[in-house]
Length: 191
Image: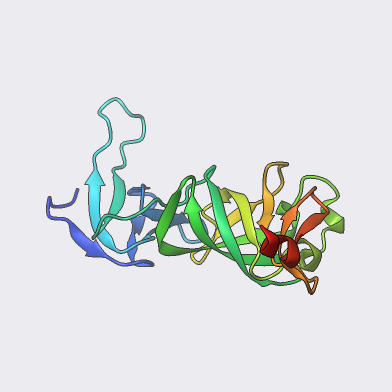
């Protein structure tokens, strides 16, 4: 067990091995090397296991050195902005977790197989997303050390706002999972 004094840690700093501790809030476990890392800057705290728990490893949590916003967790619904689109993935910056905006930068990856539930092999990432698009997604997993894995493979998820490619349009809004409707500039001006 650790001393009662909270130790300051930074993102990516090694906290310990998964054989000795469990990853809690503000940390993540890397599967490839069974190591727990800090995912934000803050103070490291050890939470002892319940006496009747079969797993007697303590849980390590990192709480922000300032009051911090929410941290994405598997199952969380997030709002993110697309930053880069490649052949098999789209990179995003997570802006909100649930109804709360994040204070730290979190990166996410939407993989080709996680864009939609059907016809996965026909997904063209460049037709599905463009840089600047705002997407609603669900966190699948903590991913790797750099990004969360996200999915838009449900009807209520996907692009919620996009810049239109049409000349007289400011923005486009989704009509279905394939089509979007442009918001015309003259219509916007007349309002």
